[in-house]
Amino acid sequence: MAAFPNLNSDSGLKKLDEHLLTRSYITGYQASKDDITVFTALAKPPSSQYVNASRWYNHIDALLRISGVTAEGSGVVVEGSAPVAEEAVATPPAADSKDAADEEDDDDVDLFGEETEEEKKAAEERAASVKASTKKKESGKSSVLIDIKPWDDETDMKKLEEAVRSIQMEGLFWGASKLVPVGYGIKKLQIMCTIVDDLVSVDTMIEEQLTVEPINEFVQSCDIVAFNKICEYH
Image (cartoon, rainbow, N blue to C red; front, side, top):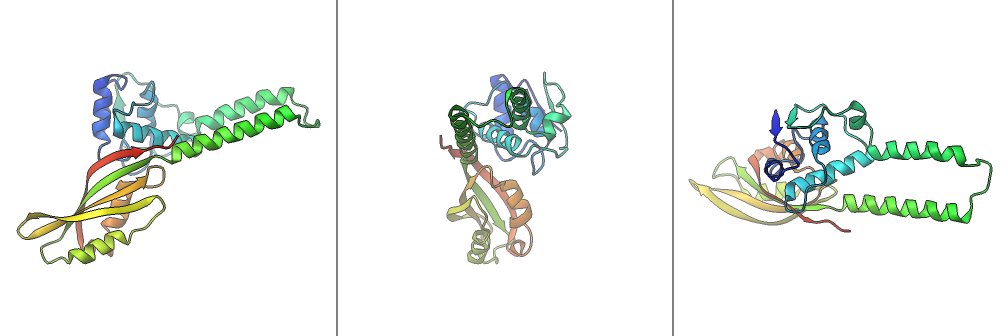
């Protein structure tokens, strides 16, 4: 079970940032109630000083706006935080606000009247605002450095790299690589990749693609060496 001190203090944010250095989520390989517990304990988004925490916060915020989070998680404790309400986990906050606003508007709108120019303009501005917000949330990118270790010194490292680069998915871009000696004639592959945060989970990619057949014929293990947010368009 993960545990954090007061997340609205420098020490709490530092521990959260260190925790997320090699993880996409608070626990496990998908967003869960543990992420919501930590998310709601934060009084405001982490500053850019906390690169990993900021990247995680934006990703969870985007998930809540789009589809909500229902996975149970394995448990997390945050000092000073209250239990997460079931409704807050299963239903995106944006949808709640919209439904409430729609109910208020329904009291004053003539369903059989014509839409005025002012109403059309307001609707277009709202749609443009939502589109811009979604684009901003989905455009965050991160640079990831991965160590990939072979089984032994007889593993064909050229074929290993070809197998790794054969993994293709939306939001994943492979970059430069090099072979690094680890001892006893064995070399590991160190490779860079750029990901779109909202589309790719590196932990899931390692668990479900890099360490399973047929690639595990060459790959013994994978480790995330560095995970850094590189840009977010505004």
